[in-house]
Image (cartoon, rainbow, N blue to C red; front, side, top):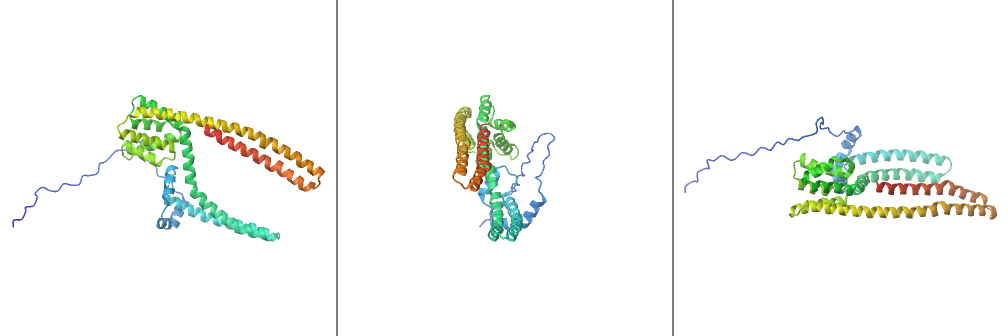
Length: 324
């Protein structure tokens, strides 16, 4: 049997990876994230344990949504190290306070403080630090929702001028007046210009990592409209009108809530404590038990009234900040 001759054509060489230039602003230099000595110690002590156990994917998603520049395993290692320090400090404080109460013959209170202080300090530090990324992500989501209506007006205006989608998000990222919406747009521009992905992939990634449900729906709509052959200009105009209507409804609801709280403030914080003070003063004079009634009166005047006023002030301040 004749042997087939070898192919004289040499195999094609593997194509070299394309070198792509990345442009930064004039004067800017890439700077690494600074790592403190505590973070190095935490990773050296708890890093192997964290890697062996694995990291919760929800924590990693929350770190990305909160724009916290740290890996999930490093964050868990820092959390464990901080928890150990908090446990040692709370244990020392609990033992010291417990001994003081025991010396004053308050044995039960001293034992309770000595036992509960380390437990509460350790549990509070651990779960508080683990919940911080989620809290920051939700706060960013609320900030995005507050600025999304004027940001969409900017997007629709740029689209009406026949500006490309990538340039629209690039210009939106430069407008710091739109807050966290501009930050999300800047991340999309980073994916296209620095990582070299196409604009639709960058928008899809932005929809996956944004903490705002409304902004996520908007980005997913952009991808769906573009891939299905639709026109983005009518879509941007429609979303701008939708967000403007929703913003007006939310403002109206918050205004009505503030009016209801103002009426409740007059009834609960002003009138009710005044009547209560008068009634207790009359009981103290007529019914006896003056020392107990006087203690209750001081608790109302010095405790209940200021706390209720500060509570209403804080709640009203929170509502007004959401309306800005």
